[in-house]
Length: 432
Image 1 (spheres, rainbow, N blue to C red):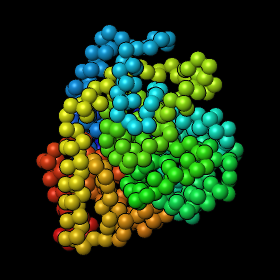
Image 2 (image 1 turned 90 degrees about the horizontal axis):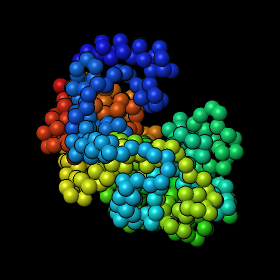
Image 3 (image 1 turned 60 degrees about the vertical axis):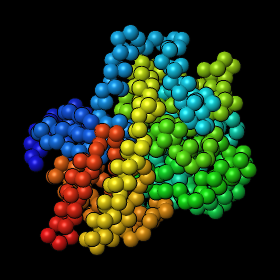
């Protein structure tokens, strides 16, 4: 493949934008300029075609430019848009659907990004409990704001230490966010007891997809629910990634554990910008969208017709078509095929995943937390992904990142991908 036009346009982008990208994690080698997307495929400025498993970090549960979703958005924009006052019929319809399907959702509010949603959830928890401290987990990502932007993709020597993710963060915000180890209930309980009566909320990705796919061990999420109940702590499930991708009722429905508050985004609108916070009515009514509420909630673009129409259409497809059955079947086919190849080539690895999500860690055991991922061969992991790009298979060329299968992928794409993976791994291991 050649990337000459991408390289030329990237130089142009850097003239007007710092680094040439509008989200930091997009600046990777090779730097591609994308111009077209359709179904399971994306195309760069040089005309190279890729089977897309990145899926923009997960929104595309149905695939790129899904006709049903796009047409519903076009239809909505033909009659409505944004008013800055009152409520639209689309907001009502979408809120009804979410409250119907998501176990924790007695009421819901819409915003525009997952970071906004987690910010609002944490502020609400602090108002409800009259406490300040927050518990998050090493390696989990909950957005860019000061409340949670610490101990994300920490260097190995900073695991569990004070590791703010950005310059300019408030010291008080950093120090009031406590960091625990995923799948370690004893660590969580010890942290709560050491900060007795001070913890407002515990926020968690029920599956930490920010670092690939680390599955919660049996009893872990249930144990968190119990600890939060015992200590008066608000349990927040950040389902911005897991929500709707793993079930129309989010992963909480699969796990059988109901949080107090849930944040959602990404797959809820198949790529269109919208996010949400939902939860128990007694908590949600503290927001000042309810007359007399004392927790501020606002946003000019909240509930815009583009996002609400797209989300309604996406959920309608999940209600009426075998979306999850299809992506779960292909996900298992991919993981099973990967395991066969890796065993055949005698490559030390662990194939992780759930439903439509998969990744291959190059290490000899199942990782249970972020610290375990020190054993993953990061150099091999990234080189493997870059080699696949040369064959038209797009997985983000970055360590510990998950892949996504959409409703637009078929057995044909999975079969071809597995063939390419075997070819690449044979060459990399000197077996061909």
